Image 1: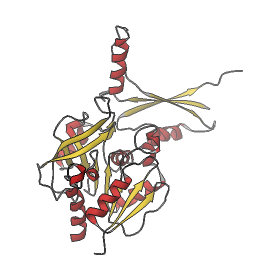
Image 2: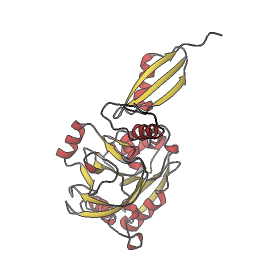
Image 3: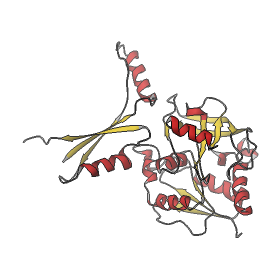
Image 4: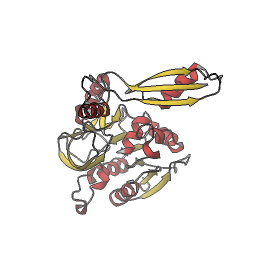
Length: 226
Length: 81
């Protein structure tokens, strides 16, 4: 396989895009392309696309709603449907649900307040290209920083996510009122992951922890050995 | 043609914002408020020949998130000068 090639999308208001690019560069290696929301096309030959945290278009209407309809997202949706790995963190997760790449919606935190702290998570499955570097049931600590992280889906959807092993991460403590404590979900094909916690903020000891590193190692491991 | 789109949370979807407003009303001494649900009002000015199907599509594709929200379209009669 040629060298690992990733893209990080920047929306107006993204503020974790550089952190995401640095995390991918440091852990996955290869090249990281920075892509602008108004671009109509992604670079060719990508292995991995990341939608970063922060805000987008002022989060007008609903968090992620405008970004989900931006020009670059049409290309991201097409790439995801071709099986390319797509990770959305925080606002990126909101964008993925608004774009219909993941089920459910992210609502205002049950406690109303913005939550910014480290959160204990349980890795629910190691059977995904994003989580193979963890053990199922492993307890990890990843920072969260969000106002709209309260995951909602109807009961039939929640049952399907559970039965299909598509809950990737669950909060090990009460954080935002998410249904079933869901912190991260996978698409039906398993190549799209959305999560509210920020793995890119936990890749080296200087961050206070490096539990996010295994996620990026999983991605590069799965794609390089594929 | 003036259109008002009323977007509201579906029944059964928890509304933390509405709950906070409820508590604030109680804090101001307004007794007897049973429930508060917060929604959104979007006013559109569209061409007169805009069809109902197009209005529905606008709501479904962008103005409301059908996972959590309902919408109601109201056509506003123009004020007579």
